[in-house]
Image (cartoon, rainbow, N blue to C red; front, side):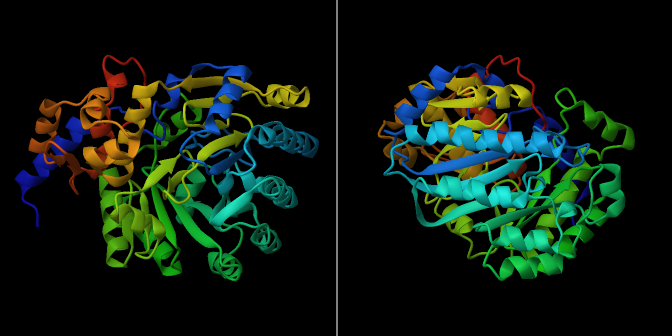
Amino acid sequence: MRSETDKILERNIIEKYNVPVPRYTSYPPANYFAEFGEGDYKNAVALSNGAKDRNLSFYIHFPYCPRLCHYCACNSYPMPQTVEVQKYIDALHKEIDMILPLLDKDRKISQIHYGGGTPTAMPLEAIKELNCHLLSGFKTIEKPEIAIECHPGYIDETGWQTLAEAGFTRMSLGIQDFNNEVLKTVNRKPSKEPLEKIFKILRSKNIGINLDFLYGLPLQTPESFLETISQAVALSPDRLVTFSYAHVPWIKKAQLILEKAGLPKPETKEKMFDDAAQLLENKGYVRVGMDHFVKPTDELYVALKEHKLHRNFQGYCTRRTTAQVYAFGVTGISQLETAYAQNTKDIAEYVSEITSGKIPVRKGYNLDGKQQLVREVIETLMCNYYIDWREIADRLSVSEDELKSATAYSTDSFEKMQKDGILEFDSNTIRITADGKPFVRNVSAAIDPLMKNTTKSFSKPI
């Protein structure tokens, strides 16, 4: 049992490091994006054909939701009439037709991902048609990952059967919590069908199953969240994800509703995660990255052990499925070798411009050579909790000195974090400790040159 002194020291560390820092789902983060046009994007796409990573990843964004959850910070909008939904789907097909001819035909698809919004709120046959459209243009790697985020609150048994036959290899079920009072407070519907029935349908098609949960919501306690995770483990999902609720009311005003309902304190939120993680580990799951728990045979865990885990806006992936991302739909962000490009956030504008033959890119970012190096370092650290400077330098065909000088490398910063038990380091490696994993974002920020004198706003790690 921990002493009172240990508990005080732990609270002090949490207070010291629980400061706003980027989430680093991209580098640079999306709030650094600036004006970026159709010509910029086409140029970046052309350059992408000659990049080292040849695989293709396609992302499709469906922005509509039958009902908006109060906690959501995604690019989501209320569901319109059927005719408007169809116009949007037609625009997706037209945008695909504009981009695919720009890509070398000898490239292979390694990943397709649907997000939102609630992508399963669109007609399910339309999802199948979109998959066919993308897959008709290119070959795939062996065992590509074709995944979709599902809201089980709106899918009946027939719907799950239709989805299971649409070519998906993985589905993420957004449960968030099994406590109906919590769901009611955050304005989210529980699953329409028993999860046991859903699992049976998906398992019959050999579809991998993720269960997604959110901690740090009103009414949640360490005890109640542990009960939710216990119920999840009983179902034996392939992957279980415990996302930390990001409170950013300056971006999403609806989150102010949750402030009125009362949000858990940082130390309570950390206990929710720690208790859940301990239970999952006791049940045979292993931790991958900040928030994923998988079975020991999962390729994500194999990649982690080899320090080869990777991620993009769609989540964690292996080097096998790593690819440049070409995004379709309103707000979609493409992640290419030399640039990011984001479509307009205005749905009517998106549909109008696509219909007139224009690519509706609005924001983006061209990475210079040094920033491409920093991106690789930070992505490696965020995914693997480990940096081997020599290995990264060899992979990128640069010297270690060149790699370190591109970052804000500082032994003084590392020594302070080492003293606090966050990391261990020497001249060639950085390793995040078990206690330091919640603060990997802080370590990444410490080696990020853009964080010097930044005026950007970010969420806290806990």
